[in-house]
Amino acid sequence: MLVTRRLEFDAGHRIPNHNSQCKHLHGHRYAIEITLSGDIITTEGQSEQGMVMDFTDVKRIAQITVVDAWDHAFLVYRGDHTVCDFLNSLPGHKTVILDVVPTAEHLAQTAFKLLDSAYRDTYGNNLRLERVRLYETPNNWADCVRA
Image (cartoon, rainbow, N blue to C red; front, side):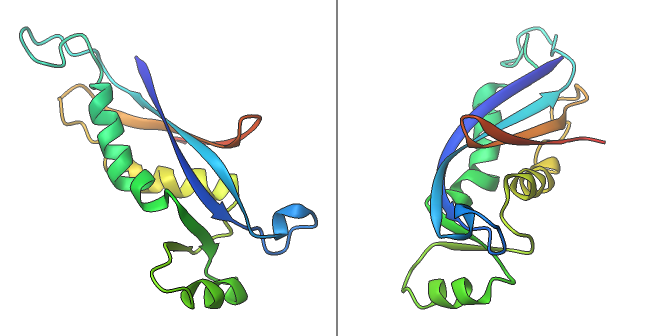
């Protein structure tokens, strides 16, 4: 069985070597979907009976692991020295420095890596992360799926 939870956050970024408008500082209303697989819990009387995982728990883990860190932050590539220096000059600015260029593909992949160990088989129902879908806009997204 597969279950999916969607969360949204706002963040800024730029693609430093891009040939279009994306090379400029800008932001998006991102959405992230977390898809988990597992067996439906059948233990009589258990709070999660009939579920793969309580959607509240799916949200809580994603919120703590990715969304709170990235929401209203500027996601910047470590190699983008000009922007890193500029953001570091702003007192108290929320900046997330990444080892990769913050494209939708890389953000989906980074989120998958961060979340993979967070969703463990805590219920004994073979729970595991299957896919992270990251929407950069309503019409554009990237999927990172378990190989």
